[in-house]
Amino acid sequence: MPTIADLEVTDTRDAATAPGAAAPGVTRARRRTDGSLAGRLNVEWARLRHDDTAAAAVASWARVHPALAGCASPGDVEHRVVSAPERADDVLLALVRLAHDGDDLAGRTVLQLMLGKALRIAGTRAGQDPRPDLEHAAISALWTTIATYPVERRPGRVAANIAMETLRLVSAELAHRRCETPASPDDVDLTAAPARPRADVELMNLLVWAVERGTVTAADATLVLDIYSPAPGESGGTAAAERHGLSWPAARQRASRAARRIADAVHADGSWPWDR
Image 1 (cartoon, one colour):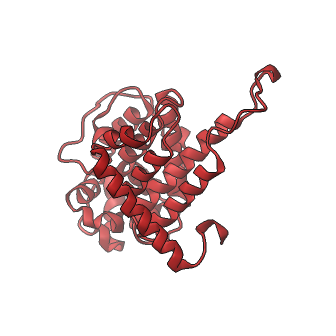
Image 2 (image 1 turned 90 degrees about the vertical axis):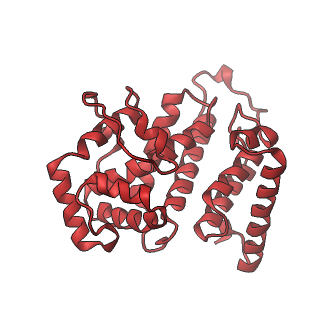
Image 3 (image 1 turned 45 degrees about the vertical axis):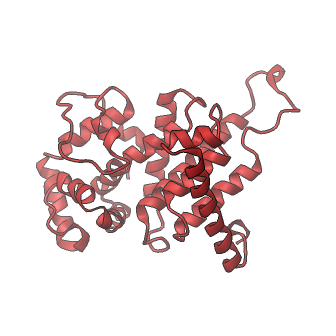
């Protein structure tokens, strides 16, 4: 699969917006056709939707993978995920398998389908780095997740697993940046605590594990993370609830239910996820 640098197209002509309704997580990304990385990816995707070579590749996928049967262009694949969300995981799994077999267009298609989610993940880290840097980090993390996704071990809940692993990678990358040694020794504060303590890393790992096994949804996991471990510059609690479009009582109840389900799952499993 190509690197993220290979996806940074610079030609912004024919910046058509993809028609039709959009699935949650990709709507805003598809509408953007500015000079940002996401905008350039959208411009490239608009061309791929009408590219004859890409259409021939999709038709070949459809003959092999039942989840893609009847698709004859990248736009058809996108429409299938948008119009039938219950089939999205099967479509994504087929595309990831193709990508791992060396089909770059399949990987690029997964990237497009999950692009909106990556941008929302970048949004949750607002205030930590410039927005373009956050988006680049999130898109790079998404591409890495697609390239390394364990299809045999995680054949279900593909969209949720990709989203949570992308979130984990972005958080780890930003935490690493914050912990890097400053350029000047005079800037070092030996008494300062890390911006994200070990407890936050454990919470992230626990939530990824819970989403992977189907204990909670990716949306609930993100809510819990935002309430109890918000990004630097963001507030948790009621402010996090507002960012998710919820009242504080509703968000607290939803997070509490998710926490109880996770606690029950850990108890039933007999060990902490990171102890394996």
